[in-house]
Length: 442
Image (tube, rainbow, N blue to C red; front, side, top):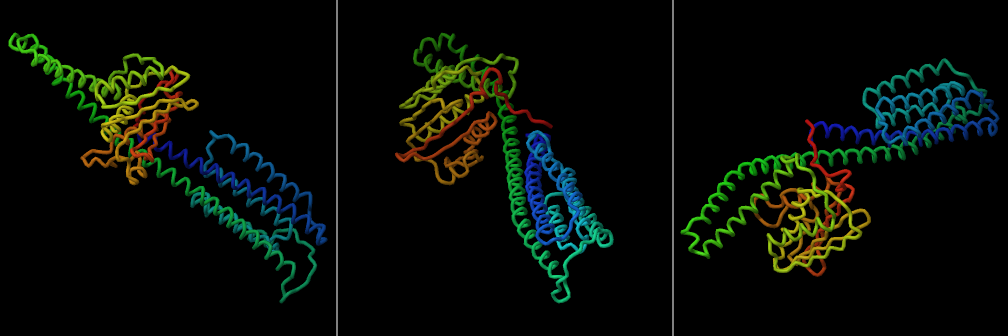
């Protein structure tokens, strides 16, 4: 994956997290609207304190309209939510709180401490500079409310020189702020942890795909280098077959023929590597069906590897038209090779359809996978074969499946041996949208 793709994916992760946080702000605002309505009702009719209901109702209506607009934006999945938008939403909340406090006693209102709730949310949700700007504005609003506000006629009942109603209001404000801070900061922290996990996964994928690109370049270079000596050997063997000294020895002629066949196979493999790396894009893709594709692949693999026993069942129905993909052939054959290496006596292959997916199940009677291998399935250089470069097979299979939208899973069978399952969406192989190798942006 190129740096441009990684950067765009990282931006997408941040945008998704911001959309989730915007939804949390919407939920908090609904609670604020409900709390303000309840408080106004209690103060106006429960305590008999006159409030400017019209102005306060207008502020609540504006909060409702902002929430509806935010919900509409949240449901537009393609729309990104930036730091500026979250900052603006918090500024609006601070402005609404300031207006309500201005209409209900200013700095003498015990709910003035709710400024700290807005600042706490800002410290978690938005960038550092935005948070400090919000702190400065909230402080200015607090200072302004000391001198500019509409006073309320409160019943005076003093406790140690402080109005009892004020103490009760401070306590209620404390309970509200504490509960909301705990609930929403925990949920916001969860969103941030999910974002960090997604970013870590993207970085890991970028490293793995860079590793694949390097191996692809090496394989392509090796294929080019091998082409010339293989062609030379093929010409030499062809000359030998025409020489009288070799024609007189039928056994030698047979061995030369076998050597020619193996060289032809090597040339086919080299051509497949070049095709998968994009060297032969001028050729038209070959349309086929799922059943024919897997049947031909199994016949080719069986003729090359000659397993002692192969139990093959193609239960894919109904059939579907696809485009033959050389890279997919290679990774599936890699699974077959691993199964044969683990279990030379018997390999079981079953092909079936699972709704709109192609499933290939490969079973063997070998020793199975260790718990470490199963836990790190698809990671490079995780192998029990004990040779340099081992463990790349399932790593390559896993990455090709991921590019095509499929999955790779493995487990040990109760009867012994291992079972590897490849599941691939048919849409990724359809003629309408044929699979392609990932493009690496610079």
